[in-house]
Figure 1 (cartoon, one colour):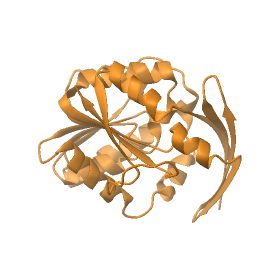
Figure 2 (figure 1 turned 120 degrees about the vertical axis):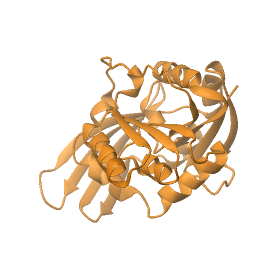
Figure 3 (figure 1 turned 180 degrees about the vertical axis):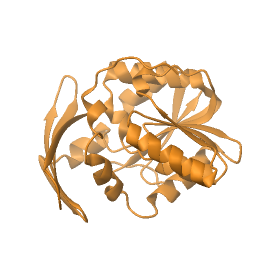
Figure 4 (figure 1 turned 90 degrees about the vertical axis):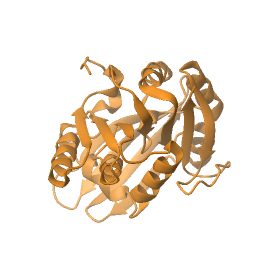
Length: 252
């Protein structure tokens, strides 16, 4: 894997306090349910190999490691990767965290499944998404599964769009100001984080919006076939109005 210089407004999103805000937004039990889903969909067991891209603090990678699944976890945050490697070493888990911008990935290994969870795929424009999917297609075994969790497909984002969102959590208050823009379709946002102690922090981000049909086309061009779309890790089929989507694509 080789580092290259890339520019994306979201590259610096997790450098400050949002690292901890994100951790506090995850409901108890969600990670275990999602890994159950990943393991079932991917037909994974001990010794299977999984690539977890934009892995955050490694909640999926570490849980898969506890189940004996060999996992490579990629993220551009040095803090997250340091945390993953420390926890993996302490528990002797088959998990390796690598600090890397996924847009610059050069993959020489192959995997039984690849996952991109927590809405991270929405960070990429169409050109960036195409380039990334092409690389993932090469790295995935034939018949292997690509699993993407998102809440920024058009079928969700348009229906649930809010100009302003306000959240309260144990250590933070959190305001989001959103603008829905076009050409390309995207939601540009300013996030204001107000900690119980410490300075207020403001960060900008963008989520690119694709319809399911557009994503199906991008998958196909990269050698994937979109097999299923669920709204929960308990395999409830996605319908218009649901707030989350789990996309399952298979390498052809």
